[in-house]
View 1 (cartoon, one colour):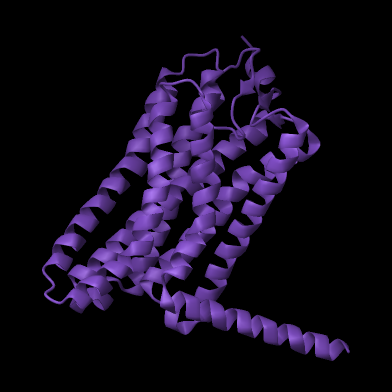
View 2 (view 1 turned 45 degrees about the horizontal axis):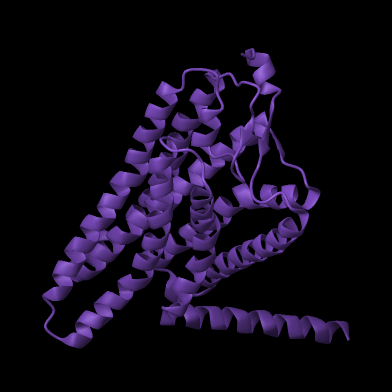
Length: 320
């Protein structure tokens, strides 16, 4: 067993994907493209919401926070993975691994909580439309966003700090492309019972409970929509929830299943693929889901791109 000082000097090996260089080259190009699309798409969502006064509503305020969380969530893991693929290196230091775990949990939990807040926003809009502006006032929206951030940071600290007491053995290979907390705990020579209990407790508090909150909100929403007499009214009400439901299904369907089973099962290719789904694919698809299914967002993005093109033309004309 290593001593505390030696533990902090350790380096982990991220085994990641195939060791074949030609496949790593293909994966580098694929994941780099996905990261650029994710970063650009979510950044455009944020800029469109900020620049268009028509989108200064609670729903789009939370959506901008979710887009920012998605950018940070992917930036926590993908750049390091791309660097490892490019340099054929698998090394990550102890401190970098701990930092990656901390920020990965922060932005993962933040995404969970923001999806829950957005479900509550849709619940108020559909079930209590006459009181929507009173209930979802700017003060409450700010408190909900701030509370999501604070709970995410505290939850991450609760899961990350107990790692500092652990010692690690000679086998420091993580069968993943990032420092996944359950996989890191499996490498410890110390007793990790307390850590595993904390992981399951935090997962229940910051993932399972919010997910149940989403289910409850949509149960109430569906019940309210079914009472609408006109088919057009039902379709309009359902359409306002479609994007959010699609994102919830993608994120929870992959992420929650992986984390609930990871501490009890050994790593597998299935787990690796599922991790790619919720760490890369879901954040990449979110901008498309929210923009393609939303007329206001498509209009705001069109106006933003038109202004950007106009400014670019003026800059070119000024230089010529």
